[in-house]
Image (cartoon, rainbow, N blue to C red):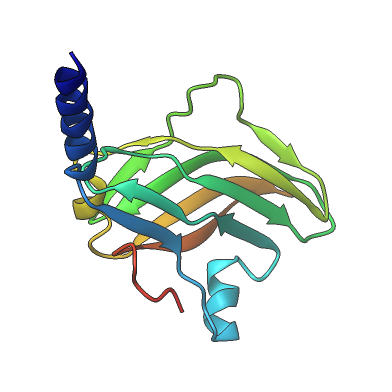
Length: 158
């Protein structure tokens, strides 16, 4: 009995270690202020995507995303999408009734996002992707975007 339990434990550990290798998916940070201004829509709406560590075989991408409204008027977030390799993925959050989401002036709001991908994250993020947040400000449709890159888990993130 003891040998059976030991063999079972070793088998479980082996399968856990033999899983898909991981990767890091992170927001690309810009040191050039001009480029940063373009990706934050004139510096008035800023997207922040928390770095995530996923297995390369995952077919969903569920990042923690926040949006900061640095303007003097409220914005209304209407939708979020991911653009990767020429394909647009709609946000499919698991909780209904989240959008439209109003973000007051000089405030930050959390966005619940869930993307079901056509391929695994390794293929989806082999080239930089773009996260777009569609919103209304002063009755005008606008888009804020951020670049997302996939890297090996031990890659230098600078």
